[in-house]
Amino acid sequence: MLDELHIRGLGVIEDAVLQLSPGLTVVTGETGAGKTMLVTALQLLLGARADTALVRAGEDVALAEAVVNPAPPEAADWLRDGDDVLIVAREIPADGRSRARVGGRLAPVSTLADVLGRHVEVHAQHEHHRLTRPEVQRTLLDRFAGDPHARTLTQYREAHRAWRELADRLQRLERDARERARDLDRMRFEVAEIDAAELDPDTDAAIDQELERLANAEDIQLGAATAAQALGSDGAGEPLGVALDALRRLPVDEPDVESLRERATAIAAEVAELAADTRAYGEGAAADPERLAHLQERRRVLGNLLRKYGADLAAVLAYADEARARLTALETEESDAGQLEQRVAEARGRVLELAGDVHRGRSLAAARLAEAVDGHLADLAMPHARFQVAVEYDEDGDPGAEGLDRVTFLLAANPGEPARPVAQAASGGERSRVSLAVEVALADVDDARVLVFDEVDAGIGGATALAVGEKLARLARGADGRARQVLCVTHLAQLAAFADVHHVVEKGVAGGRTVTTTRRVADDDRAGELARMLGGDATADAGLQHARELLAQARQRRAG
Image (tube, rainbow, N blue to C red; front, side):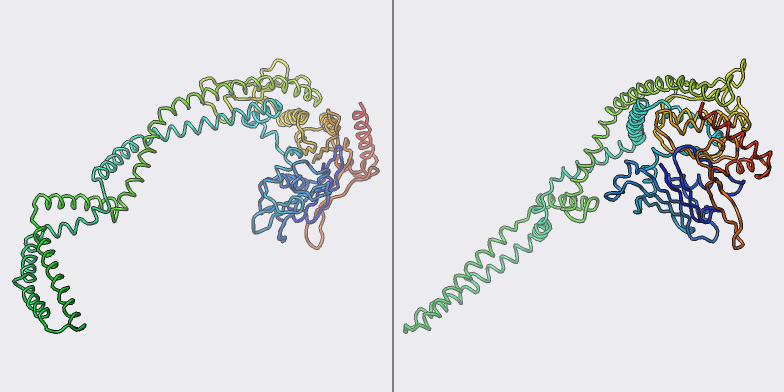
């Protein structure tokens, strides 16, 4: 439960601390004093969207802070060893994004809802207007249906999400069919074109050199023949032979002469070998028109591939590998399209099956909710009203994220009248009571131990207000034997009379500025505060007598 609520710089509140207790706590005060800011602070601590307009003029930051005791289990990761209470806070800078703190540490704002969401329930002002919306009615019915239905609904949502993902994928495949067919044709052509070339980086790299040799075959032959002749016996070979013969005939046998002979012999042999190799090279460069034509065509094919697929042969081969992978993926998508149709049909069948289960759960809960609300309406001075929950199943519709049901809250406010949607069948005050009856019925099945009501008694008064107060007091006691903490912002003395704890929000002027403060009303002063709420003088005998009678009635009804 909440031990303390601290607010600073929020709206008209400069700095206020509200000590909270188990049971029914009411907060009263004049219009505009800032009562609703207490509820706004709690909503911020539950992760509601922050607005810089909430920051009090002249303040740099607004703060909402609460002490939660005992700390909820969801806060275990945010507590230090030995801590049994939790402090949560929300800061709203006047010129920046809001910040959240859990256990004194910065945390994502969503953590506030994760930690407190199951334990604190806020029923804000004008809830009866929200109650007329079909999606809200469906959500409330689902909450009332309990955990088994919640599990079925979770299964349905997961199945629906899976079906929509498959259906969207199939739609994309069908939408992209033409483009995919064009890509398939192009990829197949490109891969076939590159494969047909049978590229060999080593061989194809030498093609330019061979082309140059074949294109100049006659010049090579003539030049090589001339060079061979000049190196042969009729050219350089003859003088070398004469020189070698002369060295052999020298009549001395000295080391220097022997060296000269060896060198001359080696040169003569090298020249002879060079002449033979040159002659062979020239003879090997015979003109081959067919080979030349083949290589020229090969060169044209390679140039075409390089122009389209890469700067060199390695790049062309890499492009071919990528194209094959893309081709495989496209062919897989093409094959998947047929299989996906079957999977979509199966997924939709599962969704429809679960939609039927969800419908049955809602239908069973609708009867129980109607009975519970009727009982509360009788307590709220509407004994003849009949509340109904219509759950219509749209067999021909496309399953939505929440099923195939349209949920409508109906009310027959008086005997003999047909049941009509609540927005049409009830006056403003009646809608407030219907809203409260629904909320109390939901509270009976909720785990939340802290319930906050912000002027849900709007549009009612007199004996009905006494009934509302009694209902909230009983709600605070808890049907399950566990006490709840119920916080109610109200302007009705009849309701405030049922409070276990009474706080007043008061507005005054200090230093030329409006300042809001809170104070707990002592038991001896409660009659005076109720007399003021009734519109009289807090010290006048008649008003005080009326207030004391209200307190006596409240005690008697609580005891009953």
